[in-house]
Every structure is written in C-alpha cells, then in structure tokens.
Length: 298
Ligand code: NAD
Image (cartoon, rainbow, N blue to C red):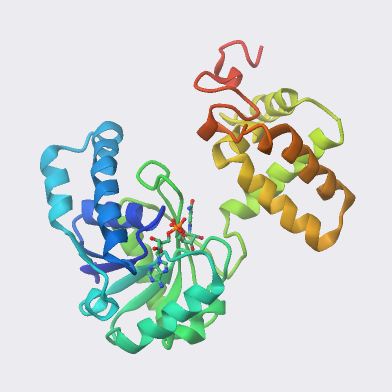
C-alpha cells in the first residue's frame, strides 16, 4: 500500500464515517473541518459510531482504542495536509464551496498528495483545474453507513493518471470497501444510474394509478429475488430526497408527470411528516414493515 497518512476534509454525515473507517483499518487519519466546534461534534459522533462497529462488526475494545489513537484533528488546512498521501474531500455538495476549497488546498498541499472527492452528483472534471493537479485527482464515492454498506465507486476524469487510479482502488480495498472501478465519468456513478430510474419508474406507475405500492414492490421482489422493492428503498433513502429530485426535474422540464409526482409526494408524505424509515412511516410503517411479513409474497 502506497498510502499511510490520510486527511479527511469535512466531518459531516459522510466525512466522519470515512475518517473512522480509515482509522479502523490502521491508517493515520487527520480530520479537518472549518471550525474546532465542528471537530468537537465529530469526536462525539465517533463515540456513537464506535458502538455501531462493536454491534455490527463485532469490533473489539482493542480495535476501537487503536482506531481512536489513529485519529487526529485540526481546523488548520495547511497543518491537516502537511504529511498527507491522500486527501478525501467530503465538504458540502455545493460547487462554489468545493471549488473554493480546492483552490485553497492546492496552495498548501505537498506535491505528493492525491485528492479524491466524495461528491455524489458533481463530476471530478468540474474541479480538476481548481485542484492544480488534475492527474492526481479523481472521485472516491462512499455510501451512507459506510461500515455496513461498504461500496466505494472509483471514478477518474480524462486526465487522471492510471497509476493514481490503481492506488486509490487498492486503498479502497485496504479500508474494507468493495472497490467498484468505473472506466469513465458518469453522473450518478453506477449505483444511482441504476437506482434513480428504477425509483422514478415505480413512482410513475403509482402516480399514473397503474398499481398500489405494495403490488409494485411484490412484483419486483418476487420476479427478481430482490429483498426490497422500490417503495421500500424509497423509505430508506428518505422521501424528502425523492421529492427534491422530482422537484428539480419538474421545475426544469415542466413535465406534467413530474409536476403530478411532486404534488403527490407533498400532499401524501411531506405534509404529513411521513418521510420514510427516519420518521417511522413512509410507504410502510416501521419497525415492522409489511414487506418483512413471511406472507408478503404469498
Ligand atoms: P454535510 O453537510 O453533512 O458535511 C459537510 C461538512 O463539511 C461539515 O462538517 C462542514 O462544516 C464542512 N465544511 C464546510 N465547508 C468546508 C470547507 N471549506 N472545508 C472543510 N470542511 C468544510 O455533508 P455530507 O452529507 O457529509 O456530504 C459531503 C459530501 O459527501 C458531498 O459531496 C456529498 O455529495 C457526499 N456524499 C454524501 C452522502 C450522504 O448520504 N450524506 C453519501 C455519499 C456522498
């Protein structure tokens, strides 16, 4: 493994998970965020996360203690990156914030440091120039609840050095990820390129009054052997996200179906605080959703 020191920029929802997972696998990790207050919050979240590692991965106290020893914190960007072999950027999904971050980072990072963005919806080529080192830049995209849903999609842009790409694939494996290399840039990577059309098709069947959500889920589950149907997945993703994606599309295209979908989700779910698993109800009621009943597919 060519990397030893890893910096994680941004300690929000995904950043703190990436930091802990990387430290858990024996790397020296520096967590960088804009304020010391955010870093203090991250420390509290690490304590809660360590319980999840013990519960879900049977991590031992010794492993957890070693993980905490591998974690360092600073709100000084130059300090955070001074020894870094790899910096993983998990700052907010806002092109202006990301570009501004890369301009500042480029000024203080050593030549050897490889930069990787965890952006979900933006392409690495949009920031390649701002990094000042396009050949040492690519996307390394994790999923929420990284310790259980351990996928890492690795996606370069046309100027990424193939050696850098290979090293990042090896790093992803070294931190316990299922490494999923893409050959070219693709908005939504592999997962969302598959998932978003499936979820849209399911919502269209519902809004067009073709069938009930449970009938649609049963069809998908029985016919493909999948453990969840599209509406159960929507409950996990959160109906607010589905609403936001449809709203952006509706505003952009004026497509009557999208407009109807936005109205449907707002009236039936958003306004009633039925936002999915997080609020205890979405298309199903939790903690015992109907699709988990033994008779659901009979
Ligand atoms: P978040 O808003 O929870 O966290 C962002 C963090 O970055 C905050 O701690 C904030 O203080 C910090 N920050 C803001 N400006 C900064 C700067 N200039 N320098 C350093 N830190 C800064 O966001 P998130 O959900 O963790 O998302 C971060 C990235 O990860 C986004 O690109 C997002 O697309 C991607 N991502 C998110 C998810 C998810 O489920 N939330 C999943 C996969 C990928």
